[in-house]
Length: 115
Image (cartoon, rainbow, N blue to C red):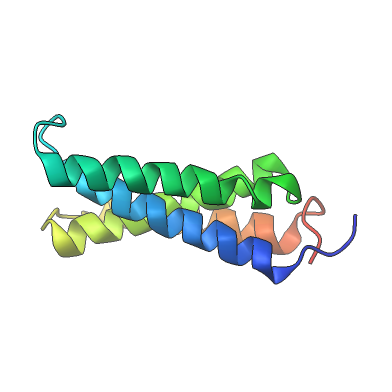
């Protein structure tokens, strides 16, 4: 497999960022009864999947999804903690660290990803 251009990882990062915005806005939609949080949620989820469609062409789907979902979970949790005042207890922090460790192990040590 030829090396994967950094641009694909930038697109993956942008997809993750769009997902974080969408999910953070989703909390404010009140079951899609509030217009602007609902619009933000729909637009940014669509943007996230569109951006995700590019790196998934050249990076194995399982690796893309592991990075996308793992980073998304951690970043959404941080956004909820910082922007929404949600609390994190020690087991939650340990779990998030394990998610980060899993993504790092896949990215650094997996033979499925060419660097």
